[in-house]
Length: 171
Length: 105
Image (cartoon, rainbow over all chains, first blue to last red; front, side, top):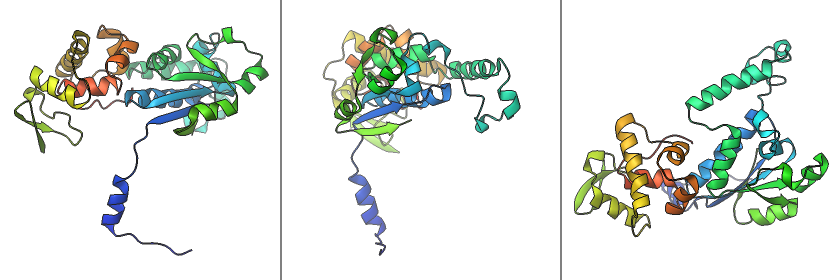
């Protein structure tokens, strides 16, 4: 393969032609606090820039929109070396609750809403919320288990249709 | 420093057209910026948001988050997006003559 060298001005003009993002579809697949927030922040951030946004909740990511679970999302204190909690302490009863509480306190200071409020905020901002059909079937969930702002339950194929013309981000 | 001629004033702006000197702002500037971003008429509801945004920035030094805007401006989130479809916090800051909000929320 031969490398092509561009003069700086060519690179710059290529950059100017880059199209702005106008639509994103974000998949949230994890049910931990640190697995859910990045996706929600990106969805909210997209809407704040006037970017059209869909959110597709799959597997344990659906906990964020499940009425009985959305208030009880925890930080993973086991198998999460980045947290800096020694592995043997991470399993102690109350550890996940304690770490979660610390993190929630910090987030409140930064004006980051708790998950249920955040879900309402992004729905009100015009982002469309969807649950994954395969996961819904697997977990035996029903429409009424989800927040009222859920737009629908989609198959993967339907999700790709909704995502058409935009970027897909998996978290 | 870039300047932009708007409402018969030479305004100091950043690369995206946000005023860098809030003192240069007045209501005629707001109307002109609003037109520039596609809002033909500023209604009372628009003004409520724009002025809340501006006052909050001038008193605290930071623009409020979308969450605070929804809770405290008197205009709920849904309506904020109807008023400013291209981004309520960003556009209200621009029209209110304050710098672009820096937070992620």
